[in-house]
Length: 407
Ligand SMILES: Nc1nc2c(c(=O)[nH]1)N[C@H]1C(S)=C(S)[C@@H](COP(=O)(O)O)O[C@H]1N2
Ligand SMILES: [Mo]
Image (tube, rainbow, N blue to C red; front, side):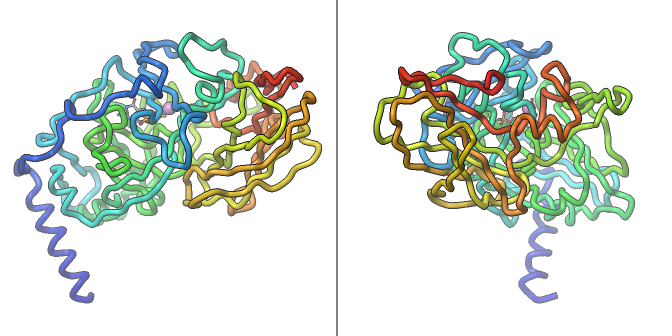
């Protein structure tokens, strides 16, 4: 072991030994956090609008910002409680227990002394862009279709401590093959994670775009599970238990599993990694187009890695041309694409199709349903993990509409 490594080990040991002692002052409290900017974000928090339990939802206005970083104040929100927990960061602890050699408890100060990483990653709710939303009626103040259908994804630069650092410090026992972990919100939102992913690129984030993690996003700490569906990224993270089997936490069993007729109505269990997706954010439904030059712009992403290319069709999918990627391409992150177009005033349909670095291509709705072995809209499988190509129809008068289920 080189001296640098052994220094670091000693440092980690000291940090762990500090655990349990109240950390110093100076951390921002929940009250000091920025709130939603009403000018940009049009929707106030709503209760139980689409779920049977208390639920707070905000959709990101994907059409209203540039580049790939979602301004923190308009990050989407999926919160399974009637209000956000107000946590005193000075008192907050993260414990690791279960099948470990040394159960540990970290204060925020302990965590900030440990080696950190800053990574740009998207988060996306398992229900984002699902056919359920395409066929639901918009409620007042939900914004344009690209916002309320696609806006349960956002992308931030997150900073925190690799989970592998914490788990190695605790010493995972041989039989420890899964984690089950819990947030400090009233519903104790919990999730399961296989050890392989936990040791790979998962981290415990305390910063979002340079600021402390926003209250709505899990202040003071949340799990970031890059590329996997939203519920894995537990907010207000409090306990991590190392276990030897997957758990079916409430959210996984009730909210996140999908039954399939072709396997005797058994659940497929929950999904893990997002497949590749893309959407044209401008021009999109609800906007009006003028003849002549049009910049088509949008976002593409994949849970499997980097975006390799994005193709755009301006003739309803008959022909495709490659879009320009603009700015940085991060792994498991939103990627900006632009495409120059001349609209001649004729009726047409525009759409984007992403390909990721593994060669996976975003499917049409028909191809997706074929893959899933389902035929129709009424099937429950349609409600999660939807990644079909989004067609926007342009009428001769320049109005634009969503034709996912009408084309
Ligand atoms: N503690 C806690 N973590 C949670 C949730 C929650 O309600 N409570 N919602 C989950 C779901 S369903 C999603 S999609 C993401 C949303 O993260 P966001 O609200 O920061 O956008 O957080 C996940 N983590
Ligand atoms: Mo979600």
